[in-house]
Length: 503
Ligand SMILES: [Zn+2]
Image (tube, rainbow, N blue to C red):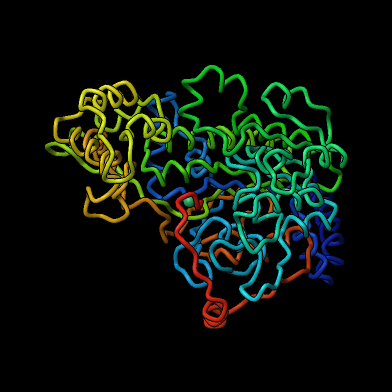
C-alpha cells in the first residue's frame, strides 16, 4: 500500500469525522437509534426463587442430557445481568399482579390490584403504550391468559381476580393471546353470559381451542385457549397421551406468537410467562416445578432462535418473585447422598395437584375424616413418585388426610402439600421455607439492543422508563408513597383474605 493512498485514506476519514465532531448530539442520536429494538420480548418464569436456576441446571443435565439454555445464555459475554428488588406498595413481598404492574407502569401498587393506585387512579400499562406506537402486543402463558402476570401488561383492574373483566379489556390491546382460561370467555361460564369468543372472532381474531387448531389457524390475530382454567403441569402432560395431543407446550405457543407478531412493520411487545413454575412452588412440588422450568427453557430456546434471525429484538428473561425458596440440602456422609437423592425427582410421574385428591380422607369435614389406609398411601406415593415411604412418613400423611391441619409446627407447611414436601424431601433432599412468595431479588438476563440498560441492582419500577425509552414513549405514570397508600388502606378498610392461588 503506497504512502499516497494512506494519506488519501487519512484525509477521507478526517473529512468524514469533521461534521460528526461538530455535532456530538447527532452521534449520540445515532447510537440511541442503534440501541432501539424493533421488538421487545419479556419472559417471566413466575415465582422462580434464585435457587431454582442451579436446581434446573442439575435436573436438565440428568433429564435431557444437556444444560438449560438460560444457563448457557448467562455465559455469553454480550448478555446483560441484573438483580431486581420486586417489592410492592406496602409489602416487601409482592404478588404477581403488583409485580407485573410495576414493570408495566413504573409505579408500585398494592398486591391484588392491576395497574391501579389505591385511590382508584388508573395507570397506563406498557401494552397500551406500545399499541399507541403501532406495535403489536402479545401475551403467552401457561396460566389463564387473564391471570395476574399477563394482565399486568395489558389491563387495569381493582381486583386481579376479575378475570372475566380483564378478558374484555384485551380485545382493544392485544393481537396474540395464548394460554388457558375458556371459563372467562365462554358464555356458559361467564356471569354476564357474554360470548367473548364470538366478540374476538368479530374483531378479526382466529380462535384455537386445541393444539391442532393452533397450528392450523388462519394467519393474523389469534386467541388460543387450551384449558378451562390453567394449562396442566408439564409433568402431568408428559404422562398423559390425551393431554399431549390437545395442549400445546409453552415453546409451541411462543413460536406461533412470534410467527404472527413478526410480520408487524412497527415491531411488537410480547410477554411470555411460565406461570405454573409458581404454582408448583406453592405446592412444594419439586418435580412439577422443574419440568415446568424446562418447558419455560424450551420457550427461551425458541425466542433466542428468533433473536438470531431478528437481531433488532431485545429479550429480557426474569422472574417476578421468589416462592417457597426450594433448595437441595446436603445429605449423607460428606454429602455423598445429595446427588443420588436429587436424582429421585426424575422418577416422578404425577404432580402433587394430581396426587393430593388420591390421598384425601373420606367423609366428614376436617378432623372427622377417615384416613386412607397405610397401604393405599404407600402405594399412591410409590406409583406417583417412585419412592418407598417409612412407616412414620406414611403415618404423617394419614394424619394430615384425617385432620386437615395441626400436623406440623410451621403454619405455612401445615397442609397436605407441605407435609408431602417434607416427607418426600427426606428422599430427594429438597427443602422449602414455606408455601408462599418470598422477598428475594429476582435474576434478570437480557440480550439484544438496549440490553445494557439492565445491570446491577435494580428496582422493578426501573424497567418502565427503560422500556419507554426503547420504544420512544414519553408517557410517565403517577405513583403513591407508602404512607399515603397506608391511609387509603385504612380509610377503605381494605382487608384481603389470604388466597392460595395467588401467583
Ligand atoms: Zn404465586
